[in-house]
Amino acid sequence: MSHISIWQLIKEDFSQPVKKDPALNSKFELFFNYPGVWALVNYRFAHKLYKKKFKVIARMIMGITQIITNIDLHPAAIIGRRVFFDHAFGLVIGETAIVGDDVLIYQGVTLGGVTLDRGVKRHPTVLNGAVIGAGAKVLGDITIGRNSRIGSNSVVVKDVPDELTAVGIPARVITKGRDKSQMAHNKIPDINKELFGYLFKRLEILERAMGTCDQKTCNKDILEKDIELEKIYDLYIKTLKD
Image (cartoon, rainbow, N blue to C red; front, top):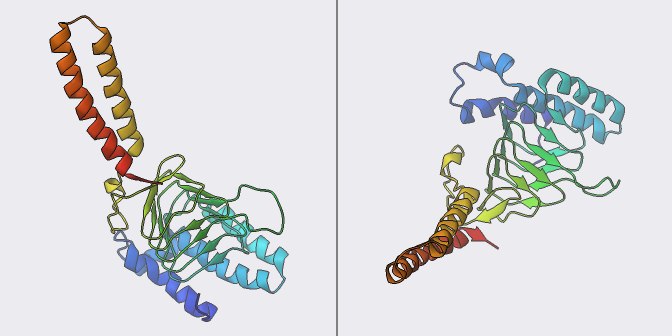
């Protein structure tokens, strides 16, 4: 992260809604409709104080910010440049989290820890250009790669490589649906839906096999459906990356 003045950082923070939110009609709206920007600005001051060992004051600033904005940013966390919290309500970023430059984070996201040990890195590292969808939980000392995407409401507990997408609970890295548009969450495949579809079709085949029908006709029909189902399953497996 570049070493620039706090005022330059704040100027960049205020510029992000203009660039990344099509709902913004006037810069005047920044003062009333963008709690994520204000939480980030307050964090800039609190973080500087925290590094200078004024930890209690820094925590007080962010405590008041949390009450006003419903956003919980720990002043010790490291947040880079041109980061944008879209809507941002319910956002939580823990003490040892690191967020790189040009990261987009939606509302309800948690960058949380999975251990109570002190003095260790407990929270995620999010590298430059990543996008984290609404409601996602990214937990533990893991790394979200450059320009990667986390699907909404996913629970991520393992590293996500650069340029890939992770979805599901627990999240799995997928190899398709990697539309580069920041807003294209609708193009991320629903791997859980695909798996349940496969299971229902498999159950249907088993029920037909156990039912009463002409043996020759039944066996032919079941074989055809089984081959079709195996193709569906193979396609499902190919969407996952070990």
